[in-house]
Image 1 (cartoon, rainbow, N blue to C red):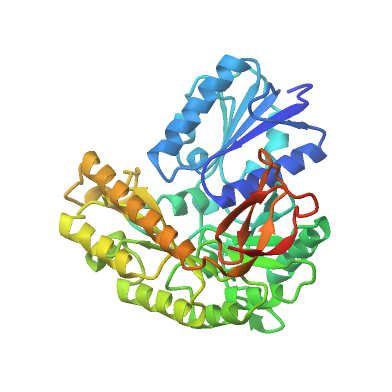
Image 2 (image 1 turned 30 degrees about the horizontal axis):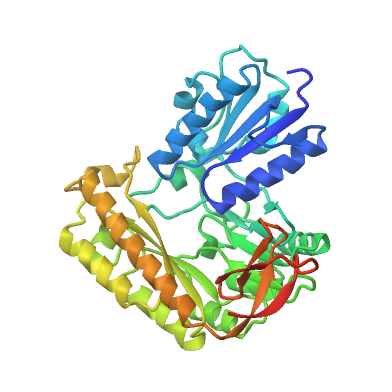
Length: 429
């Protein structure tokens, strides 16, 4: 393709996708592209997709149609998990010019130069078993908070999940490289780093997902990573984005409790409060372990925020099993929920399970847990009323107001004050 000078991006899905989009954007800008907003006309549009739910697939199609109406001569590139899982399906969407699988997304400029509008869609993908290597990525929008990818892929085989098929085997950066990235981010003025990965607690496997990385005869793991990051000058805050309960060890919790830089904030996927459903999901723990983890966190850090992922409507989830989940979550000392409605995914074991839960029941259960989440968050915030906590304020002036988060993830909104941007201030809640 000749003369493509502007590019616009849209990201669907997780924080890891956002970090990768941000890195691809900087890479393309370094090669001469001018970045534009996705709402503007551009020569190239890049959609980084998710495929965790059916809605993400639909949204990708809707975005392509919108581009076709707005800029029919532009090149449309689809990458990300949906592109790896269903490249031929995507290539048949009218308007799509290039489909890049997991191994090729960071070679995007090379592929763009080799295509022309009007050609049939080109697919550059390979079997996920062949995907190896680790591409370090980070997203940084306003310098305040950045999402740093330190791990990719997953060796687990949960019965509802397509991520191992879309991302490949578990692999990670080295501690030395993560430290370099963190130091570079500190130099930009970033105050907070959120550590991200597909299975973050599995950090330590090499870039090709083979034997664990060793340095000076010491195997690397997530606990050692956070110990090293804690020593870096310039970064004032770290958050652990999401970590499996079976990989959230006591030593990690104890370290965070004693750290000045790692925030008292955990996000721990549960998925179901029923041990029967957890077994059908092929999760690697039971609810008793989950309750133990929450109990330890709250014993050491009573003020800590704990977020929970949960899926409703999984095949075989009877009314009694859902009630188990609801009652378990109601009794747990947690702060908020991310509630997902089960969505059938091709080539997953869950498709063979039953009985299937009808969509109306799935949505009603979702609504029920979202209401519980609202009540949990209201209670958590009210329990901190009158306390003074440190808030990292963001750079945005939104109609005369500015926002920030406390160390334990309570959102604070105050009248905009010049000089408070990207600063940590004491604030009475």
